[in-house]
Image (cartoon, rainbow, N blue to C red):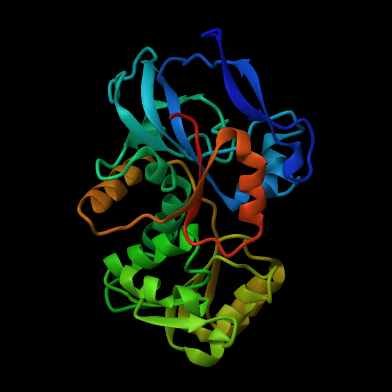
Length: 322
C-alpha cells in the first residue's frame, strides 16, 4: 500500500455501530511543533459512541464524515520543525486535540508534541492506550478541580469503569477515604485498588449508605436515576460535586445552592505534563490499568456494541499492529 495513505475508521453519517467502516485515507503530515505518531493501540471511551450517534462531541466534530477516537499509544515516526521534547522512535501516549477531532481510530495521528508524554515503561501499548482520556479525566477532577486532600471522604460513582477505577486510585493516592459505587461483583477488585468502602448500587441507594462526604466525583449524571442530584444529599456543608458526564443544569445548580454545597461541571483537557506524572505512578506500581477486552481495528463496530452494553470493567481498546 502507498506510504501516503493509511487505514482509518470513517463514518459518513450519525447512527449505530454499523456506520463505522475501515477505509484508506491520506496519511497526515506533521506541522511545526507536531509529531507524527504511528498508532499501535487506541482506547475506546463512552464519548466515542455518544459522538458517533450524534451526541457527545458531535457538535464540535461537525457533520460527518469524520474519524473518532482520542486515546493513542504508539511510536513517534516523525517530528516536525521546532519539536525538542520528542524524537522518532520514542514510545508515547496521549489524548491529543480533545474535544476537537484527533482521528485516533487510524494508523497514524499528528498533534502537538506537548500533548503527548512518554509511555509508561511498565505498560504495553494496549494498556497504555487505555490510560489517557480516562486517567486525565480522573486526575483533573480529583487533583486539579477538587484538590482532594488527605483525610477527606470522597465518593466515586460508577467506580468500576474507565474513569472510575482511576479516580479511586488517585483519591487514595491523595490520602482520601474512598467510597465507591459498583455492582457487588466489582467490590473485591475496587478494594484492591484502594476503595475503603463499596456500595452495591443495584441493591442500595448510596445516599442511604453514606454521608459527610467532602467530594463526589459523579461519573453517572442526572440522566440516569438523577445521580448528580442525589449526590447532593451525601455532601457535608460546603462539599463539592464534580459532575463529569452531563455538567450542571440550572436545576442542579439551584439545588446545590439550596443545600449549601457546591457543584461544578467538568470537561477533560489534553495535558502531557499530567500524563508524565501519571506514568510515574504507574511505573512505580501505585496505579493499575484495567483492560477488559481488545478488538482489531476492523472490529470497531463490535467494540462499540460491547461498550454501549455497559458494565465494562476498565477499558476497551482497539489494536492496530501485530
